[in-house]
Image 1 (tube, helix red, strand yellow):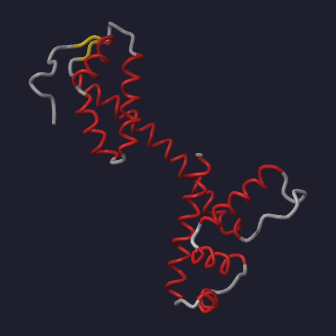
Image 2 (spheres, helix red, strand yellow):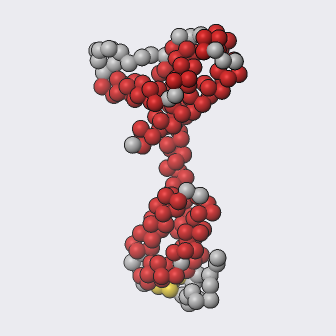
Length: 186
């Protein structure tokens, strides 16, 4: 869309920047963020963060020659913060995925003596997430991971091909990681 003729072309002081941006650049900012994010909720969150950042600028000494350029610069910083935050979340998922096979090998113990506090809670979360999978996906994981069956034996037991079993395992692991991540954010 770009800067239209009816948008300010003069320098703007820091205190007025948020007002001018809200009056003239909301649509441009949303379009800019939509191209980079795609997710409407993320676009709204980042746009709100950008405007909050602009409101906090309480400096008349700051003079902005190109308001939309400055707005994009602030938006890019917010996008970088979002990316860093998501990278931390994905690191948690990677750690969870590395431990996923080990966690799936054990069922939640009947007593709390073996697994105190948080560890028991996490095993319960894994069990709850496993219960949310379709029976076919959950059965594939249980047979291969908990019961230790080979792919061929598990496929025979489920009455599917080995290739189908591997696909089911891949889907099951991905869904389980997503469910655990959703609970962690929750």
